[in-house]
Image (cartoon, rainbow, N blue to C red; front, side, top):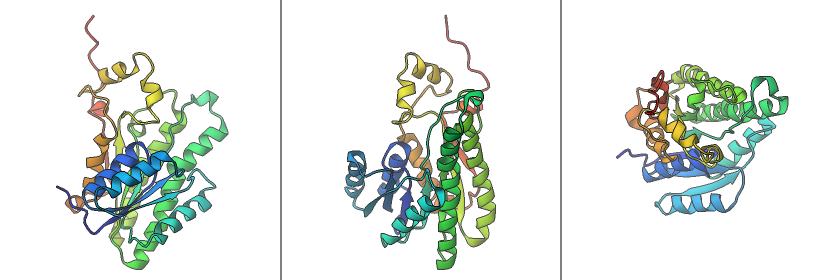
Length: 262
């Protein structure tokens, strides 16, 4: 069992979906949790109670990371550090899922996607890195990307672009921050069922189509990502730096699935 005893993690976008699954798994491994969400609602309170029931400390904070970026990031950073927990694990997970073909893409959609999926990651990590270096803390960062950072879809121009940026951010920041004993990695889920993806998956035939295009034939829930996240910020992964781990059931390795039997 991975142990994160003595560590404290900020999980952005941690009240729903992949973020919540990650937060719960880190808590199971013994880490205290600062849970960030867009708002303090029933789902957020359920997540807090689930984590506290595991015997660790859990603090809830709220804030919209879609901008204005500088103020939004400063607000999250200040709230997190004000909890009194010595946060050394940053799970930069908050993001948005946007659709829209390139020729029809409007500026507002593209701008919001980039602010939440790219800018907020970049500048929140910058805030924590400066803090960690000043305090002599060996921090660990995990960014949540997507298989869409590798594989394009015609109707996801802004989203694909943002997730491609996240993957390069992982590499660049890993190289930049390694001399300061700050380790940076990323995780790129394939298609998992979350509140964001459920409307698409519930369309007739969509889940079956995605299962066909995934070698293990699964479209799992967000818990499929949780163990990988815990591993990447653990001591066991001390020599893993600047990597994007695809948690996708093999989808990214398969050039073309066999056609279904007629």
